[in-house]
Image 1 (tube, rainbow, N blue to C red):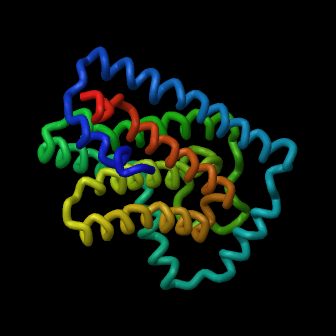
Image 2 (cartoon, rainbow, N blue to C red):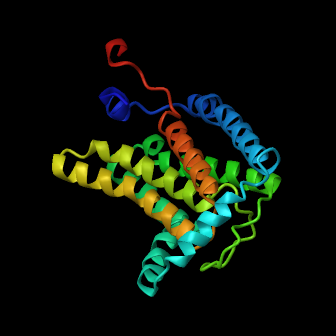
Length: 232
């Protein structure tokens, strides 16, 4: 990603009109999200039908289960819960309010909210259609009513914290910018491992959840057209 893309909201800080915002959201977020949804459902169908549910992934889950310890049980509980719906929404609301207050740019502040909203929509419908059972392992977390595929925890944490990493590029102090970028990008990795360790998802569920969150983060980041600096 180029420096111009990372600082696109600095390059053109002009507010969009309501018509421009709705047009861009429809063309640059909602329409591509349909393609993403179709891709995720197609992958899920491939896993469940021609590939027979990838039963070898249950062996991986049981292998991870055999390595559990009380210490790692406690650590991964924290990592897993970072991706809980209520925590993701709460962190997002606080972040949107803070960025809006600091920048006075609502169209920039809503980027994380767009990311998690689109991710959640794609995830909820896809998981209802595919209906994949959870791994045949001891589950350390309560199983939500959704099915195993794709991982909603992984998708939500990726969508949220990747947008935070993109927004962190505005920070002027290099050491703080780099530190926060690394921390934000590390969070989804920890959530994904936590969900695998705790027997809540197959590896492919986590990988596709990562795909869902990453694409939604990028759609949110580019949701609004920004002018090229040479045309301003």
